[in-house]
Image (cartoon, rainbow, N blue to C red; front, side, top):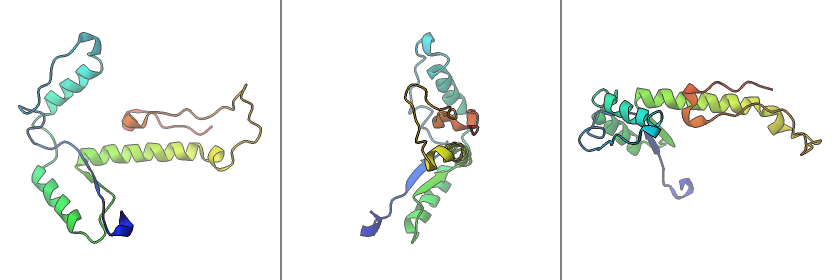
Length: 137
């Protein structure tokens, strides 16, 4: 899009004090079988309502600043909570990239499918802040 003069910005918002988690959303109790997963998320959303750190008016002003910018960012992370999650995720991805640097830069030429080499453990980036950092081999 950039060669056509069209700028794209991905907005990655955190929690904002809106009606999103209140009366505009119906959160069902759900099955007890999912209490440890979906149930915890639903409880967190109920408890978070009205306590979100983000101010929607400030977010709107920030987005307008980006719209009017000559060189807007590809990503705009809005809110201190979103920033913390983005930073933790990026640090985890960078740690994993560095842990796999040797294999990435120089793939082994003597790979034997019957006995693969020992590699660093990967982890799920969706919850990077809660996951251990990948240690180099």
